[in-house]
Length: 248
Image 1 (cartoon, rainbow, N blue to C red):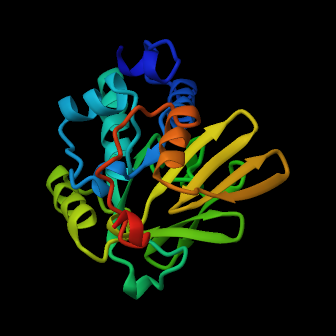
Image 2: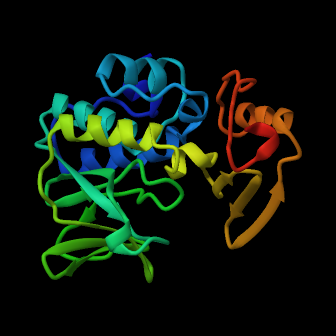
């Protein structure tokens, strides 16, 4: 299986905006967001061979560094000029307390953010501020911010970063004991009706305009959720979640 088979799209022949939109949309819908490897004590690798084995061949998901690195490489192979950037996630954390631990891309004067989780845009978002769905980019002084409705997701200087910058950030995010990705289980899959997310035991299902929640009873129920909803076949017997004591 190659990347385009994984995302259910015929490989575009030319780097057009229509192709860019199709790749981003299909990627977000096909490849889930998850941090299982972090909680299994296996910090994610960002080399392309490892990413293609995990996210494509093994049909797993990943977090922002994995999504963005893989997507960027596939876009560049078609001929797109892609820049890689870091951002401070400010949804619940003040800017001065939020390190640059999020990775996103720009191409054709649009933001591409396939690895943001439950609020990831399904289409390129114009840098000029034109809204796309619920998302828009806003100039805030010397920085740009990505919004979902009235919710400010992240801020960035839009400086182009190097792969080594993300290797360092990935190591910090996956190993620092207080990192949210080390502390909590996080999952997201988009469905034709909406999305399904999990934060620790809490599962949220959005179908159209309706939202329902439930709690995972135990590790066995999580295993079933992964297989039935996220199409992830992964042994989680050694999964450790510090904020769920019996899974710690």
